[in-house]
Structure formats: structure tokens, C-alpha cells
Image (cartoon, rainbow, N blue to C red; front, side, top):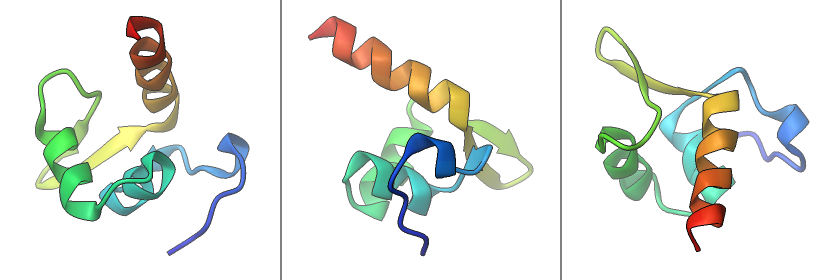
Length: 66
């Protein structure tokens, strides 16, 4: 698994492992989050990914809610 030190290093579409690393959560929690309706998951067949720009927007929305 890659270790990212900045948002610029993230791929355009993130896997559950990537989401887990970025958010500092477990892989299982990343999958749970990716299955929630409020999270910007893109489903391609059975594969779930998260567009990088949508993840950043989602994080900013969560910060603004606090």
C-alpha cells in the first residue's frame, strides 16, 4: 500500500485502502463509509472507488459541520 504525504500524491480514484489511509480509519470502516449514501462513492460494476476531488469536498463539508 502506498503512503501518501500530500493530497497531490493521491490517485484520481481512491480504493477503500486509500480512503482508510487518508482518513486514518480501518479498511472495514472505509468500506462501511463507502457504502453510506452521503459518501461520494463511484461504483463501477462491483468495484467501489472515490474520486479524489469528491473526497476532498466531503472532508471539507465534514469540517464545516463541526
